[in-house]
Image (tube, rainbow, N blue to C red; front, side, top):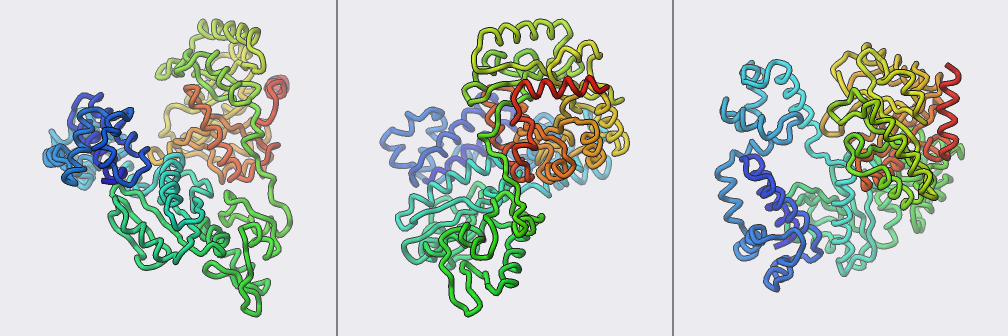
Length: 577
């Protein structure tokens, strides 16, 4: 029994238990067991189970071990089969509709007998849903939008989740005795915010097609496209898709380039090659006489075509080849350029760590400052900080700054941008902060003109230093609210307001295309982790990846400045008012 199949069964059990109202701790136990099983590197869990090694793993308990025992002995789980028989299959799919939680699904199932997404859609359209207690016409409309969004994004997962899965698959590929080396390619290597499948390129010591075939026959495989060839699309039982490209070692460089994409970039480079008398096809480069040129790696490929190396993040067909030909590619920001972060929450609002703990964690990451920006008073839903609590917080920050060495804590706030464009707190309070982040957290349904006007008015407030997560999107869950970002960027450039690239992987807001637009206008971008714990600081690295994809250089990013320069910028803006 392979780990992926076992983990898939355990996860489905967890979902069914949650849906049927079982104790949430019981459901969580099965999800924890699934995570533990996925960390096992062997292809077969059964020997580990029989030796007693599985029982010693953290996250595996008697009940979950019983499921694995069943899988090892019979290939099936009697407990899972029993649960599945009792639960309509469509209810599990309904859990993935944005805005629908367990309690709402239960109410719809009991009240209207709805058991599938199709039935849910019909009930929302014909008015039955709006008549159920606790719903209404607006809820029905939101559910219809959620169903549409589910269908358009169903195959995608967030970047960090894809990276975790890709690393597991890469370890599996690298462990093959006939694989010399392997690397992750595709949209993960290009750092796309959401990912549909995992691309891996493998250099093989023997015939590539035979190596590819061995992966197609492995445990946990549901179906295979391209069987018999050296490139396969393998779908596993849990829905994960691996696009595996097996090649001879001498073709690895071009194969990695091709599998990295994007389609627009590869097509443009092929056209560029033809213009220079070369043919770039399959996994080889030929000159005008038809001779195959030796290409050791991607650097050599671009060099042979008269171009400097183009970083994978930029390969989207958005002018990177023209910039390369003009020797005008950006010197992209790197994680090492980051000196500190500003968008961080503490226990004063909805954070899980103290200010001292957040400061120590920032210092441990090599940063010289951290900004504490808890939610403002209007954000009652997130424990917004009262005026009285702010005074206590600032006194605490002063004490920490007197005792901690090598790190400075800046006094900030994430102030709500209210519906009329005002920034939460009066000027007297706002004057107390080293910087102010202004964010929209309510009334997302405003029309484009009203929302744009709301944000533009907020930018007029001289105390506002940074515009937080400007479009309000939540990837795979909530679409951006209607807003004219070109108008917002124009005004930010005019007034010197910094625009945030929120690095929370559920947001990544602004997106990389808007980063390019900001750079073109001279707007400074702040990479904000929106951290609610010390571990949350680590998403800064994901934000740096999106900044790189958006062509940003160190000078374009506020986090490359030191603390004093940031404070002075905020003061200078207030002084100009």
